[in-house]
Length: 508
View (tube, rainbow, N blue to C red):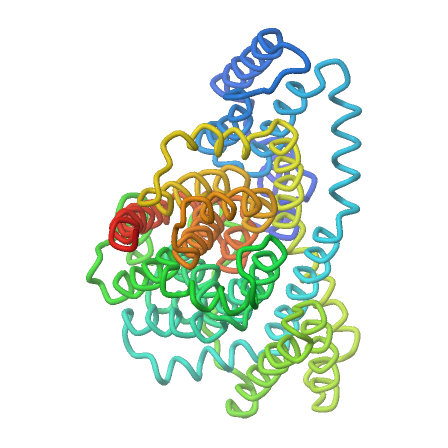
């Protein structure tokens, strides 16, 4: 049907692809569902009831868990991550300041946006998005994909090569999540691998891999945290390295993803449906923020195209390591290098490269919004005393043999509920370390349990930064990614818990 033959209503009912992105204005395609409305009313009544029940000036106790539970309920019911976080945060603010929750929301939101970590995230993720967009618009990603296509001949090999590439990009989980997915999604599409499976493989080699390598952003951060909190009299990095064999979740998650890629572990639950859909010719799920890629051949010399893909990646990794594992300085260096490299070869005009960087920033708006609202939820949970409540509740059950398993389980729940892989441990390490010293527990084993909990939370939480970036890079929604990988993260957590119980008994 030609454009002139369309009626106005038909034209409105079929918006162009340019107007279909997450932030585009549009007409609602359906009326609100009564089920969602009733759920929101019920949650509001619950929060108001708890506000009346709680005595001002006293600890919130078990009530501190409610906002995170609300986030889970809303997210699973609606499959909408950002809205679930916003509702959970608002519920917590009503509990904290029932008479001025709007003012408290404004204060916390402003504080979060002025936080140095959020500013760092915005710059790193935005520039990473722009960097990857330059690789794609110049055709270099296509060249690398075709190069890999010559080496990879089967579906299983496409998943194994994705996992291996994720292992090699160990310096930072953000870099891993975005670079691996950008490099491999065209190849996995060709072999009928679902984008959900791609996101799972990418996410499984992000945080779980980064904790196992002592030259990563995670190692640098946690080693300093251990030193400043008296976990060791020597170097914090030395203790971190001693703890690597006991970071069980990282080892188990890495082993599991290779078993899944080989086919020894079958597709489970929602992943089974996703893979069946992909084998039928639809690797990208309905509603995903991505479109199918054309199977076109690269122009020009394929080897030059591969070099133009790998050289900026090598500069990004090398510069990050050179600047003492600082990904921001690394990505700035890589963006400048890529602009000069492509301009010298006349692969693209300066205006095209600048447009690509701006497009990359725009694609990161939704994941950045999710992470920012997640920081608001973390601040709300901190003020409610959620982490302290969890630790105090479990203290009576602690014995030297059970300490590692209980530390893993409790901190895994807290990180999963808050999405804060690093922030939680600023609070918990000063409590857990003296507890381990008092019980004469193995410090490397306890540190291994803490890092395992951190990597599990980052891996499993549907609004953690690495999970959101893995889903964004792979072209699926955060909840589509979270629900399909949940069975595997739960298997990993169960085996890890049993492992810590056994090690706790043997090493006590």
